[in-house]
Length: 499
Ligand code: ADP
Image (cartoon, rainbow, N blue to C red):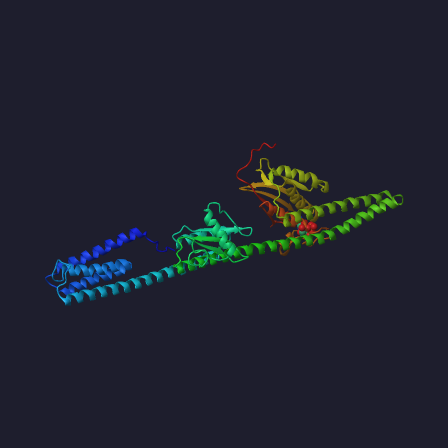
């Protein structure tokens, strides 16, 4: 909003005098030009017209001076004896006095009308500003945006300087270092009193600015200093208060939203942790019982067991223990990724090295060498946690080994600004209805007798998300599954020489 900027007093009075002089000169010139054709009454009317124009254009003093000047000029130039200030007849004297009163009344009335019109326009502009600010504030998402909108509104509404500062940690003012000490003190004081201070407020009337709190006791979000502040400018002060009320409301809404979100994510985290705890205790119990059973049989009855029986028990201990280790590892990583707000460490990593390490580990479970890998040389490096990425690819390969028979293809390709890792098998595939659900924790498909905890793919997706990538299941022509991991590649690559 552009409020009428107040002209400097000295310039304003100079302008008044010039307008008065011009109007009186023009009226006199007209009177003299038409002297031969019009009567004294008409000449008086020309001066009245000049007074009306002055009353419409100038303030009360300017138009009153014009009224007095008009009567004086009429007397000097036109009332006999002309070219003197004397008044010959009583009738002319009464006419001049009447004209003076009329001129003064006209200028008083016209100035009043003009002032009321200006006030009405100003109020309308202020109402529009409040309406616009409320609309803008309804969509803000950060206190910085409120700060910018508030400062802009104050600068538009008042000639200033105006300052707006927000609080953090209770009543401490944010970024208030650039303010004068008196302004900072005024702001602190108004926040402590939770009331407007300054001229016309009844509190600290000697101040030369208004200090307005943003909010009320217990809900303080900042403070505002508005200049110039005049005790008689009640509507200006009310407008500043209305602006501050809108800003305080928006700031409080943002605070409430952020504490609500924090509480929500806290509750979600706690719920997730207890779900994991319940699930892990359930998943660990069966393999642990099997290990304890097999180990105690071996310990107490080894002499009575045949070598093949002993071999079978040892094999079951190894397989149960490795299942336990996988489930524990997956659970712990999933808890870490989904319930911790902490950032994990990422370094520049080579996909070739990660895939090599995974294959070395998974091949122990792939005696028939079903996994065929194709990793071209010279792939760009990715910023990643190598342990997590290895776990992701390892889980996909384990699933392919578990749920399919026949060849499994592991390929890595660079595609524009992305690195694409794909694990394809020729197993039964996953029905379309289950393709989204299998990425949820503890979701299992039609397992065809395979053992699992339903955590592998959930962890894979969480790892992909944490790296800014995606894990998707794509249809594979000819049957089977095709899990595709896409990782972003940064354009700025480090030197290839690794330490
Ligand atoms: P788990 O293997 O422990 O059940 P996952 O989260 O790894 O848990 O997998 C979820 C489900 O997705 C599995 O139960 C299985 O039904 C299905 N699945 C995963 N990988 C494959 C695959 N390669 N082929 C067929 N089905 C699969």
